[in-house]
Length: 71
Ligand SMILES: [Zn+2]
Image 1 (tube, rainbow, N blue to C red):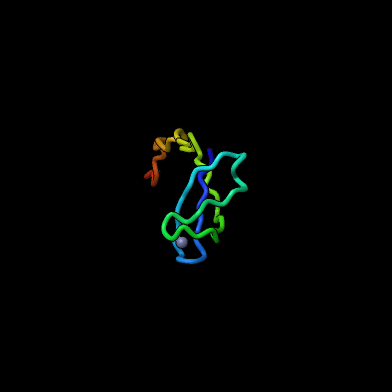
Image 2 (image 1 turned 120 degrees about the vertical axis):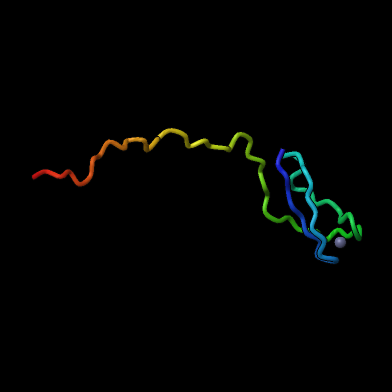
């Protein structure tokens, strides 16, 4: 379920609330001043499993003999 951030226009309190998709149009009351003038901020969708492990690409190719003393 997405997590929405709201901000109260009266007291400026910011709070988060998890709403269902069917409730996403609703605006909850401010938990601080019980005001109804809350507005939705950016929705932070919890990305599950977003940790991309960029493994591989091991730079272990160190066989380059630099400066060969050819004479
Ligand atoms: Zn408020």
